[in-house]
Image (cartoon, rainbow, N blue to C red; front, side, top):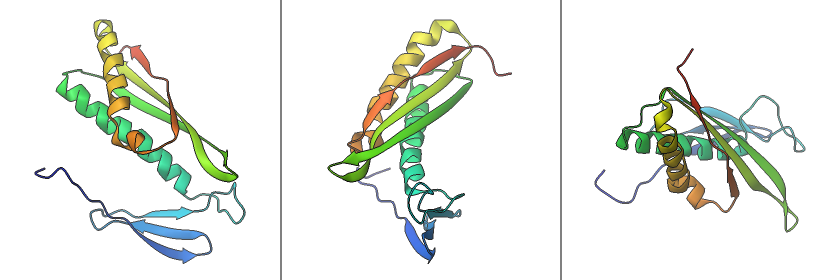
Length: 149
């Protein structure tokens, strides 16, 4: 990319009640979103803003990790990332107060375990989404040794 500035667009169409559809001119897929069932008028079975916020954190970690791992020539078998958000009231208003990010990496060779941990830590520090939010991130990585079964 030639510029240091990038733009992304998402368009939301309200459907009914507390349900809408997200689209982007750059993508083919749509995502239906709604107020989560934890809140009054919430709807079960839909992605919520809270899910999408948490997804942006976990997917940013994954994309940043894979880029750094590729650059560092770290071979890995699998990566799974669990992300858990806690909502609470801050100054009387709901906010995501904490995110626990639990990436689990599988590598074949134990001699690369320390390198893998360092790369996971670098990815967490370099993720532009986590650097862009004020929510506390609890980072709890795991490196497992073995092969995919």
